[in-house]
Image (tube, rainbow, N blue to C red; front, side, top):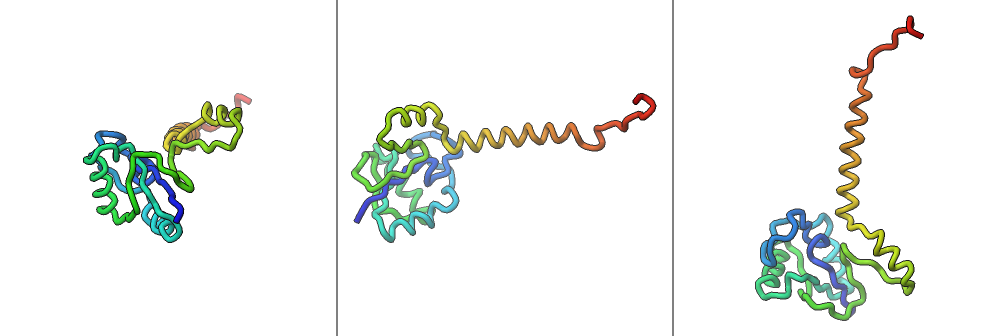
Length: 145
């Protein structure tokens, strides 16, 4: 059976708190992760891939977190193993063209970066919209026209 490797932080674990230690995993799963992994396991062996697994303590923390969140996988590793595909929030797909790969690297943004920029734009949009509230606009004095 083919293997799918799925990165742990920011791909299964929401990773909203960021890195604190290999064994501290305070965040909840990303919506849909449990269902997607269960569906993938029908046709693939699913292996979680994480630098946390480079120590026994980190690997046990990932294992416990997955069990606590009802996510069943076929393995956990810190080593890049042969796989059909890797699912990772920080990956660039190489298509055989280094010019395109270099462009992709130069312009790379994680989905977290895109979401943060989007939230920032929403704040600015709300500020701008607030300037045009009807209560903030004075009526035009027709005598001055």
